[in-house]
Length: 396
Image 1 (cartoon, rainbow, N blue to C red):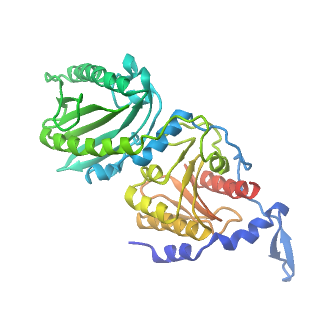
Image 2 (cartoon, helix red, strand yellow; image 1 turned 180 degrees about the horizontal axis):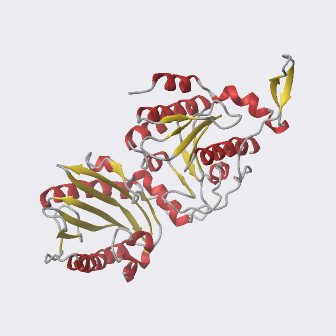
Image 3 (cartoon, rainbow, N blue to C red; image 1 turned 180 degrees about the vertical axis):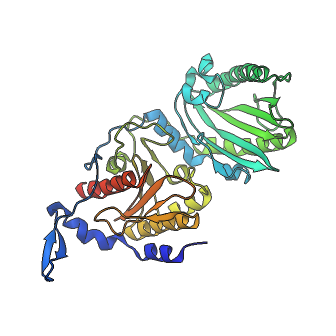
């Protein structure tokens, strides 16, 4: 149940009321009172730690990785593949190297035909069906041309079959993977499937060329018939996604670098999921607990781009819409059972809370048309990041 006192406090809050405070920060002064009631000035002291407070675009991801992020705008949410996939898993990310591919296509980095791979995006999720763990991994991989994509499919299928055979043998299983086309997945497709380690379950990986793309999906823990039905529906969706995102290419001149430069940099380089990237609203919503709900909120706020660094910085259409989006994040956290913590020093109206069932702490800020979210392993880290964001936006 929503904590109504906590929620109401933040719905009333508008950072626009804080702007006079920010405006005098350059002079490091804020109104106060002496013991006798006389108005005095006391210094503002934003606790930014060692975080940078001037705009810079260092650490921006490679053009291939950013192309993968743009392709993510067309990839279905895990819940759209099937509602049983309720939990996001780390495979939800752009793909820009053979190392990325080998994380979910075993041995992909050793396949010679994959040298023509350029970038891609995959969504992944986990869930439970009849008390059994299930998983999905699906996306679009873009190659240099249609010939290269078609050649990569059988080569990867052979590599996967060999890797799975070794895994099953090591587990003492006598079953062997099978590789065959599945009607309904398009010309040139191959599905590698095997009765997996848990009795009664299969693991299937399907690949199909589609123009210069390779469509890929992995289902784990399902029956064979359920897997085939999901593969057919998923590949129809992925083919549409590839067609809709056909214009996405590797561009050396990246859009929205100006927004990226306004987000707080990490103290050290990070490479997890979206770090160092700029996302569109759908790609960003892929990371949410409920992707569809977050996507609706981002679209309602007119968000056109999101920078991912030590702070996640959203650019809304207006300051009013930024406040509404901030309230959405705070309310969602409250509904999930988050617990309120102290606000940063000299930012009393910036909410911070411990994320439910987690040690992670988050602080959320709305400033003009921007919304910033700062997470940390502890309260100090989250407070320093959001405080640095206030100063950075002021210095922009």
